[in-house]
View 1 (tube, one colour):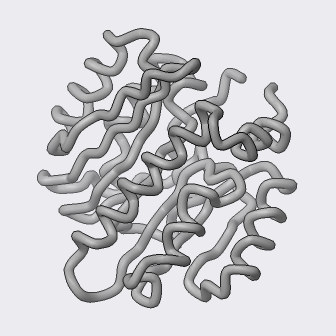
View 2: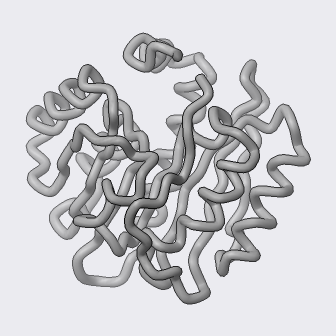
Amino acid sequence: MRDYRAWHNDYDDPQSSLSQRLAVVQRRLGERLSAMPPGPIQIISMCAGQGRDVIPVLQQHLRAPDTRAALLEIDPRNVALARRAIAASGLTGVTAIETDASISDAYAAWVPADIVLACGIFGNISDADLERTVRSLSMLCRQGAAVIWTRHWKQPEMIVAIRHWFQESGFLDLGFDPLDNERKMGIGVVSLTGAPLPFKPGLRFFTFLR
């Protein structure tokens, strides 16, 4: 299994594929926060790593006081770094949770969400797990919620399939940003226009292959 603490080191290089992806994910998250109506906002970040997708955005966003964010991550080293970043940021509504984000039970205290981030997952699981995850994500959402997702586009047919599965599951496709970098990373955004699935405890969304 990949060392996901060391994997984050690429973020320290502003020219790396990961840094380029991060910039787009952060921009899309900021846009979704700005589009939210008045009131409380719930964010869920699946396999959140060190929280880089979320923490810097909330530090600079006017909706931070309204936002509660759950950063779910299995690697205790990354969780510790996320907690350190949260403490340094002064954000009071962000929590890093050491848990297995592949199991639905991990989300029970945080649903329904207004924004779900599924970044760094779809390219590391089987096609069957990928389809099941996409088709199940609405159970984490309230109607109108956005999902920000990522996957490399080295296999363009899989991007087509993912967008199709989201559409069949009640989501409106809001676009896909294919980055022309070394890893061919891409970022998609969808919005749940249909009714969410009922929350199902004990569901395994996926198993990481690497």
